[in-house]
Image (cartoon, rainbow, N blue to C red; front, side, top):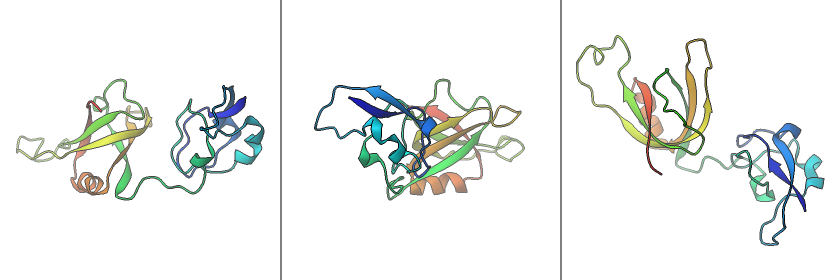
Length: 163
């Protein structure tokens, strides 16, 4: 049976394009409702309710109005300087987002400040967004933790942790 698979990541709420899909052959299992390849034109232009990961098989339940992030969660985009993003970080990685003092701040001059550290899951990584090697990492975390990070007034560093 020919079904649709996700060819590249698609954010929740983003319209699906033909380039986002590919056709794959599978042995069907009636308990898994997959979208048949012949329905591709009906899928193009629709939006996923949840983020779609490349390589996953598409099911009808993944389509519809964005229902992500869940209540009580938030997605935060963070601009990280070179050296503050662990090697091999990818969507799905479990991390701690840790505040670090900004260069030129009293904390950087040696005055202690309590770092803020919050658990998060990586949603997307976009390396080299400017000429200085900045990487933008989108993080899924608890809404209260997102507020803590945003209000910390510090730069961030990521630490990969076991899931």
